[in-house]
Image 1: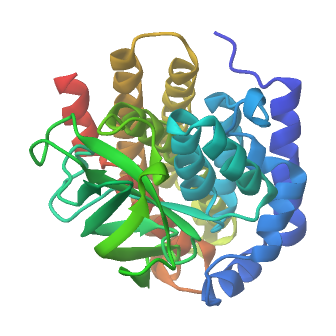
Image 2: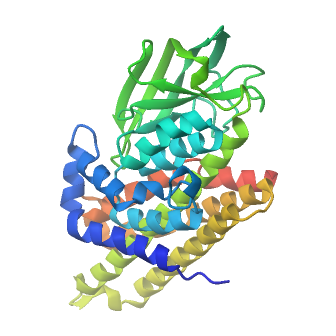
Image 3: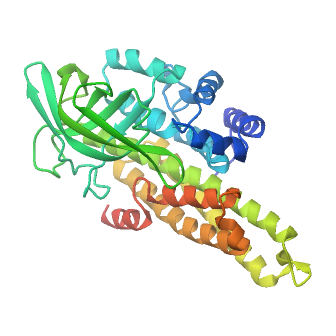
Length: 377
């Protein structure tokens, strides 16, 4: 199996690397996180100019090609630098749902704006008690003539505080966890009845809790057929899960590199701690975990790009997220322990990398959830 990058993928990788080296050092990232929006609008426009926002979309929609393998090349580099710009919620999830479910008119209206960097999106699908089950939806959607009334609450909405439009997952029919009856609606954040409570996650990224009280939208704001959105939502979240896993791989590789460098300069008993055989073994284990995680993420991406059955794709995604979750705990904890107390300080990037991979472990289902999901498929 050939894991080498194509010429286009190498260009994407080098493009991100050059941007990070020139404009995204650790201090700059901290200043961006401390800002009101928690991301840089200037950087977002640059992403659009560089063509990064077109990568998740098919060529017929004006995109780069839509390959998941292309995406993970970028996401791995994003992970190394801990980029905080809302790439996944806006392009991968929001744009992915519009691509999968939207009408020709909806695509023509929204996708160019995403790729131009003028439209921020968020997807509100998680609810208290849903436990990663995408079908578990209490938020109701009641059709009244040519309009729909939405009521309910959503949690952990990535980029919810910055998005201009929110894709709300709501139930039009059926029981709370039934697969049929789930729809997705495009809701303007300024619409009457929409309440947004913003907060900052442990890794510094912005999220929000969103309340919908008698929010009225046109029936034409629905993406796809009534009550038939769950399959597409699952596929989009699986793609986002692989992207998060690739981002975690990049962050873990950065942790490994920084730990090895630190072990060469930190001295104890008059000698560098990197010469201690016990620590060498632990760092070798970190390297193995990184390589295992990277390989299984590439496999999952290739599965998603293939023509295999949906269940095989889902199994590959869960296998990758489960394996990456184990690597996150091993690599993250070893990096902190080898660095000692300095590893937990705000002034050193290692502690921030640890927080980032911890958040990525929980995102879209932790390792335990995906192990159970793999066994059940």
